[in-house]
Length: 510
Image 1 (cartoon, rainbow, N blue to C red):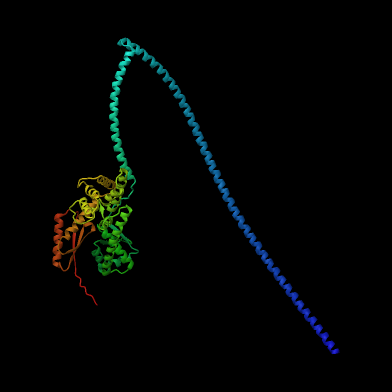
Image 2 (cartoon, helix red, strand yellow):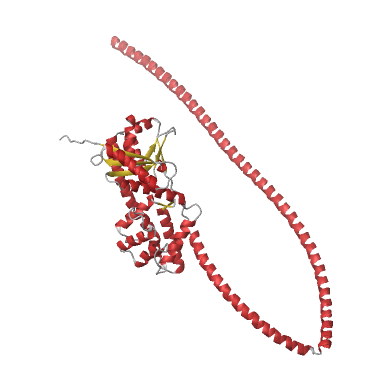
């Protein structure tokens, strides 16, 4: 029993000691947690204080900036107010000065008026004295003299009235002329189309001079193939990052430019590839010509044209009239005709149609001996245009007689478009005509396939068929062409005739 009591007492003691240690550890842990919480709270407090300070500094900076801007605006306003006050003060002084000058002038005028009144009284008095003396001399009373004067005045009034009527008639004629000129001037002012002078050179830009060697090719075979395919002279000189394409035909220059661009972009430059690309570009140019013709007719509100006529309109983009782009000239003439027809109360669409087609005869290359107005008139008849349009095309240079009011409008508007200073240069037209005649002359020989005039007409390249012309015949042909050009044409310097004969053997592996 005593042992049990001792064991119980020991258990109680052990339990108490354990509880004490457990409680001590809990208290210590609680104290540590409290200290940690206090430290963390102190850190949070410091962070919030720092954030509050930064926010305060930021707000203060923003406030100072706003205050400075407001002060600057106030200073600027004060400066403007001072300037305005100074200007007003100056204007006030000038106004006062003018008022004083006007008062001085008024005083002078009043003095002069008083002197005029005195002179008038004196003149009236002298007139009365003269009348009395005239009555005494003539033996007529003033009443009789008045009647005679009235009769004379009536006769003079009739003469003056007749002269006035004649003057009014002349003035009416002049006014009518002025009104007609006014309509023409207003029409010109309402059309503002730039007139560009065509040249015979196109510059092709390249990224680096290394590309020039690839374009030239081994022993120049690439550049020869490109010149033979396009008929354009390609000048590769010391000009940095540029190649010059020379030729009088803008269609050929554009084909050469686009083909060269595709070849340089693709990187494959050799004679077979050159011919393939040139053929593809020629098709693209043909499609572009049709697209340009359609877009032109849509812009001008002209409908119902024959597809071949639309194609001829598109080819105008690559033709020039005395250096003036033919398409731009025709569009401008069409707009002028439409405006003038509207002013005169005529058919606007018909006038625009005739204005657009008036130079269509310059596009075809055949029948060059006929005037372009006659060629254009025949084309219009062929494609079933209205008689008014046909007559206007044929009569705009007086080749045929005008029979409607649209014809003189087209003639006048054509002259307005071409007469602007700088719009045309006859030198370019004669130059292109000479080169075209040179090519046609060489093309008339049998066996000739293509002819190209290059170097501003100083060289003529003739490409012949190898199966039709031998090497000996090629020498003879170059001599004959040179002799014919020398006898029949006028040109500066000398013309080099180059006959190119190439033999190709083609087989296919199947």
